[in-house]
Every structure is written in structure tokens, then in C-alpha cells.
Length: 311
Image 1 (cartoon, rainbow, N blue to C red):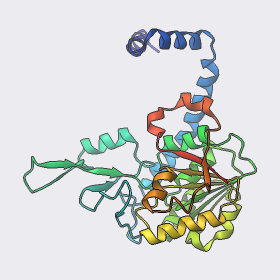
Image 2: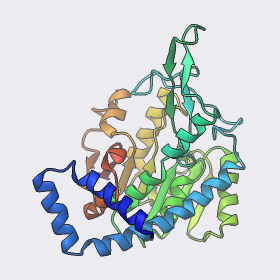
Image 3: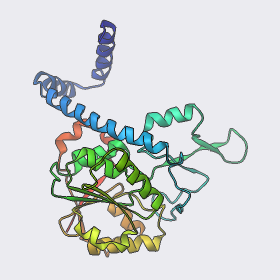
Image 4: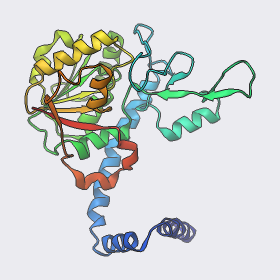
């Protein structure tokens, strides 16, 4: 690092320190003086190495799926209930968070490949900002799931991702955890082909990671054997009745003691479906298992991830 770079770094550190109160500054000073940050820095570097593997996979996937990462063979219908009920084909755009992080979205807007606004009435100044949605979890969310929410030792556990699509959760579990078995279940064969292509191209251990082309409702055996079930919001892919059927199915077949990870609170999901009462006491919200690792994350970006245990 050059002398100019050192000065620039000191400037950025002072800018950050200037925003802290005395208590916060003392805490940071103690952290640095104790040199405990050295171990945490090594952990952070290892996490960055694993994340670079996911970045490479993402770049490969970008070359083989449409820009929107939505296949012509799938049916996507905006929901009519819940916190995404205001989404429709006009005001909503899908930008996959696994493929494009926030910085990449900014770059896409700059070069004109992605628009952030739509016209309300054909007068160009009367515009509304588009709602950007993602059907995948971001790389940071995946790291948070496996490095903060779930236990560190998953060697003898089976992870199930319901609706695995591009396989983001599978790759995250593969690189960020020691999970013994990682299973993705996906109805759309095109997406299954994408996942299997990535598994083959990147020489992932296919004894450890598996993709099943099926409706999850037809594979109660897979659900029953899972120790961790990860479910992304399903609103865009099933109607209300199918959605209710799926949660009744999960309640019946997910075994006691399993972990359930969702990117929307179950209280909200069940309330939207008018199922709160029939699912009362089925699950309990769970304290994150590796809270000490929160230091590696911007917590606000991971606030919509929830961990439960099945009673």
C-alpha cells in the first residue's frame, strides 16, 4: 500500500469514528487494542473466499438464463394477498439478488439495461419508481443464514431448499456450511437443468448436493428427512389455496426439532393466509445460533430473515 493509500484509509477511518459517541468509540478502541479483531479478520477473509465461489457461479448462470432469471416455461402470477399484493406486471421488475448485488443494480441502471421507473400516464415526468423483487436470496443473506442463524456444525444434517430455482441456497449451503446433505426440490425442469449443470461444471460433490425435479407435495419423504428447511416467499408461484395446502403439508410432515428458515415472518405469512389459529404453537421463533458472527454483516440488510424450530 502506498503512502497516499495509507492517508486515504486513515481519512475514511476518521470519517467513521467521527460518527461515534464516546461509548462506541471506547468499545472500538478496546476491540482494536485487544487484537481480537485479528482472528475475526481471518474469518472474514475466509468468508470472502467462499463468496467469490458464488460470484463465479453467478457469472456462469447469467450466461445461460434470461436477464430476468425467469424461464419461459414457468408461470409467475403476482399475489393477491400479503405484503406483495400491490405488485403487478406493470409496476414490478424481477432482478435476481443472487446474480446482481446492489452495486451491480446501480451499474445496470447507469448503462440503461435496467429501468427503475415507469410512466403513469405517458407524460414522461409523471413517473413512479418500479418495485424490484427477487426470487432468490442474496449472497449476503445466504452467508447470514449459515454463519449466524443456523448452528455451525451441520455435518450430520440434511438441508432442504423448497423451490430451489437457480440453486442459490444449495451453493450457499455447500460453501458456507459443513452440511452433510443438501437437497433442492424444484418443479421447473429448466431450472433443475441449470442447477445440475452448475454442480457438474464446478465439480461439486454430487453425493452431498442433490436436485429433485418434483412438486414438493409429492415428496413427503424428502420433507420428513430434512433437519433444516429453507423456504423463500412463495407468493408469486402458487395461488392462495395451493399456498394454504403447502403449509398444511409442511405442518404435517416437517419433523419436530427441525429448523425452518424463511425470508418473511411466519406470523405475517400465516396471517395473510388466514391460517394463524390452525398453526398455533406449531413453531417457535429461535435465537440465532452464532450471534458472535453478526459482526461480519450489515444487520439491516439481513433483518428479513427468520429462524424457527418446529415444536
